[in-house]
Length: 367
Image 1 (cartoon, rainbow, N blue to C red):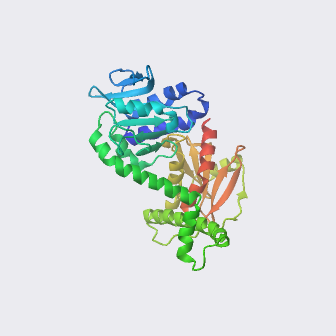
Image 2: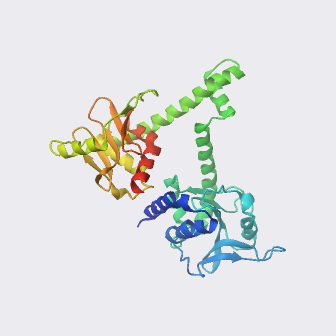
Image 3: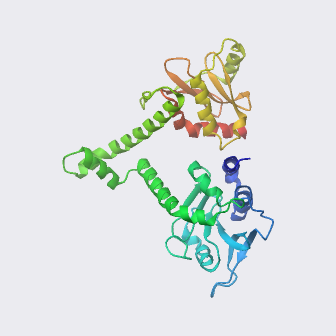
């Protein structure tokens, strides 16, 4: 498997199993050791490569242990401290990393809960671990731009100099991206004031702030929608004009049962044309649920009135339906009773707004 595929497979495993893990030890066995072996490429059963419960006496601190030390070229290169999956990652609870970083050859420290991995080095002061990570890998939301840098930490491609040289840029670009994301999600007063002062000529009063707070949030969301839409439009070769965004109060329409849908599929084998738009809708849904199941298990069957997206090519396991053969397009979403509700959309990128529903459906079908 390619590096990205192994990473996606591990992310899928974490998503499916994390609710069942109750201890830090279980987290290490189920998630962290597979990360060390399948992603970083080290033999977790070879003490010359991976040293569990690594100990180095530090001053008055005797017998203090760190969860794993990764050895490369007979030198400790990476230190890993683990927490229980779901636990917040805080350096206040990882004091061993700071101390061990200063007395070993390690230039990379990793703090993880099995789902989120924070990578640290010593950019701010030599031999002193930074207080902020230079790379953050979240298996629930993988940033594919980080894969090339992550590969440099693997056994076969380990390149410490390249990692350290890139760490400064990675650190600040990552922090800026997370700061921007937080502002789009929940604009701060400074963010609201910044944009208000550029479009409003009056004094910035409390009343003005209250007026512009929802406007800034709405404009930010619309901007993101338009950027996604433009990317999709370009990729589909459909020109540069984005399709309209439906109104927020567009009604959902509850429709037919699973049995009725099965009948439609059986009766519509002839005269069916699968459009490019249906294929692209199918691939978007595939990408959304790739962390829940292997994408090869997500298939489609086209009918005269809709295109069904299925798990395991089984029409009793409907993930969604694409009702695109009409002026108003709909995505059919299923509840626990396999009843379908049509959600109106006017552009393909709006399928992403239904990501939680689609993933929940796949988890139910795969249970």
